[in-house]
Length: 277
Image (cartoon, rainbow, N blue to C red; front, side):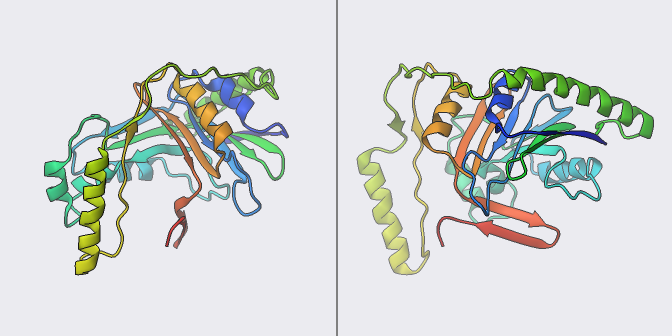
C-alpha cells in the first residue's frame, strides 16, 4: 500500500473529466455537500478484476470469496480501494431468500438482459476530502499479494494516476456546455389504465391487511443523442445529491442521483438514512 496527498480545493469534477474515457471508470460523487453528509468523493478506473453474474444462485458466495481475498485490514479511511458495483433487484429474487422470489421471477420480463451482479475491483483510487480540502491517491498493489510484487505495482499505478492529475487541473472551473438532447419523449412501461389498475389492486391488498405499503414504480425509457457522461453532467447540475454516482460497466453505464443512504456498515454497526419511514 502506498499513497500520496495534495491540497485540493477545486472539487472532483475536473478529475472525473480527465479520466472519464478510461476503462470502467467510477465516480462516487458527493455533488451536494452538507455538514453531516457528503464529505468524500471517490474516483477510479481500470479495475484489475471484474465480477459479473446472471442467474447464478452461488454468485453471492463467489463475491464473498473475492471480497475476503482482497480485504484491506486496519482500514481507518472510509475507502482505500476494493469493489465498486451493484446488486440488482433480480439478484435478490434469485437468491432463494425471498418468499415471493420464484413467483415474481416466473412472471418478470428480462427485457434489458443486464447482469444481476456487477463489481469492478479497483487497486488504485482517488479520494477527495471536501471538508479538509485534501486529495489522496491510494494504491494497494492488488492483485499482487506478495510484498515486493505488490509494492512495485502500487508505485507504478500511483505514478500513473499522479500523471493524470495534471490533465485534471486543465478542467478545473471549466463548465462544458451540454447541448439539448435530440430524441423522443420518455415513455413509461405502464399505460395510464394499467397504472391505475395497479394502484387499486394495492389498495385492496392494504385493505385486507396483506400489506401496509407499496412502492409502486414505473420505468421510463427514451432515446437520446447525449452520451452517458453528458447525461450525468446534466443530472448532476439539475439534481445534486449526497450520493450521486457514475459507473461504466463496459457496454452499459449506470448513473444515479440519490438523496438517501441505503446501508452503511461500520464494524457491527449498521445505519440507514431512508427518505420514507
